[in-house]
Length: 73
Picture 1 (cartoon, one colour):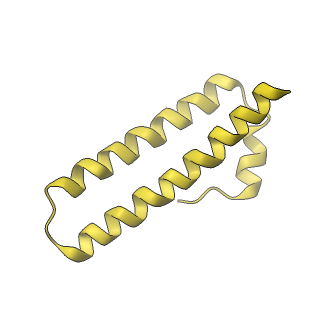
Picture 2 (cartoon, rainbow, N blue to C red):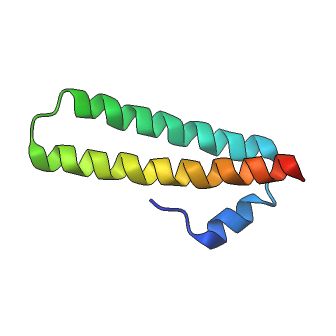
């Protein structure tokens, strides 16, 4: 679920509220993945959940950097 550079560029033209809505949705997804990890004992499932949570975190980082750059402008 990694955001492409093209997708990141398209966010620059979106209203701030749309960007924040997407950021909040990604945070909720990451929180849900963490919750699923708590009760899971299967190694393969845990690895998949962790991988997905890390990917979401990277997407969040990209979007928050974009927000930060927009605030500087």
